Length: 268
Image (cartoon, rainbow, N blue to C red; front, side, top):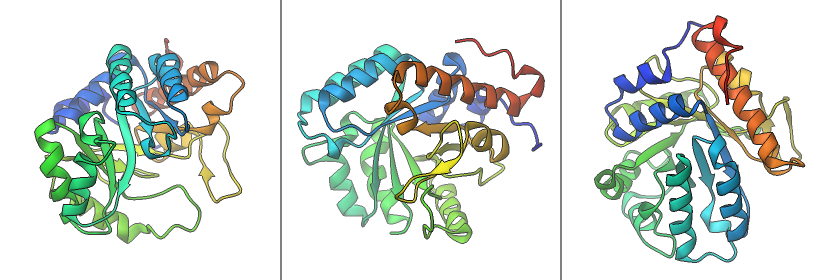
């Protein structure tokens, strides 16, 4: 059993980043560490998921560029639903270019991501200029950036050395970087937020190299904070019921990680 972690509320006190502080408190108050990966291709589907499953979520993760009937009104409506149901929006854009290019991608084009997404992510491969470029847009709007330190796909090239270099880049930009996409905790500093993709209720893999781990493994064994669930909810017979199960599993894992005696006290 790893060393017991601080609560989300306690860790919010350690945060200099205002959005990280807000997210930790939202998770604590809502009793949810569940992020839905809403990988759908129609605007109506996305809005319906946000409305129906939003009460179970701390985060909704989008891939806005796969929406086939995108209009600017979609993100306006999504923002309204998020505010009503008290979750944040994470656009999984995975920026990966020079600073000036990502700056324009973030603030411009047809998606205008910086106008509606609370959180974005980026590969650290291009170097610290990518953080500076995105930060020129996001800092003044109090947005947050996650760096991709590890991925859940088989045989990816993000090894342990890459993860540590990514951590060092984040440590140099704590005003904008709020955490990581990773499979495990990377640092003893409690202000970082770790979000883990590829989570299902049972371990396994798909035909395209995605590897799944359980909420318990992600949070208790690996020390991460937020479980990112896609197909486990989207492909369920009843996505709302499935989301409730994942929320409960994630929250019970969190309670176990901070004090084993509390594991059975989850309330929806």
